[in-house]
Amino acid sequence: MIASSALSCPKCQRTLDELSWHDSSGGRCRQCNAEFVFVEFPALTRAPTRVTPKAVVVSEHATCFFHAQNEAESVCESCGRMLCAVCTVEFSGRRLCPSCIALARKSPKAASTHRVLYGGIALSLAILPLFLWPFTAVTAPLSLGFVIFGWRKPGSLVGGGRARLIIAGMLALMEIAAWIVVLAFGFTRHR
Image (tube, rainbow, N blue to C red; front, top):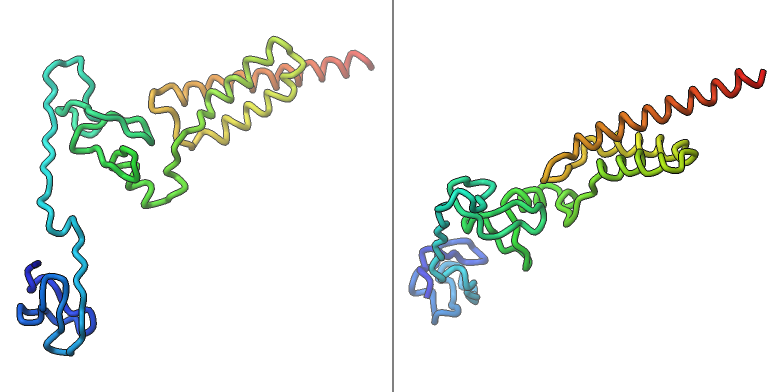
């Protein structure tokens, strides 16, 4: 039975004493005479498990994103960060880091299972159509749009996201400038 001083009557909220209990599953409040049933939550009586992280022994081993002194034992399935035993949280069958769980609590929409790499899309739209140059009239403004749209979005954890956006933006601006020169030169030539 749970310590009766820790529980209160569901009706009058007064503390239940030991005489209020019939057995370990329920009883009657002596103050308000209300019957109550106690449903034990397994974590309430289970001894807490102690998690001890492994210290990094070899400098080539991966370390935890949050604790550089601890060896990484798993990877966050949402953001890809390396995690030690202390930081790994089993949540709905997935291993997540504390940051992703906090992000999911703050805004469920922000905690996605994948990331769109706008830098890669913008760079592809700026470079690939150069082989068929007339398509750059359409893809250069699209690439610039992806650069602007993706600038404040979360990038790759590996890095290089902002660099791709900058390169794609510069290429798109050069392609747009080239089209302006070509069109301006074409109109003045026909006069």
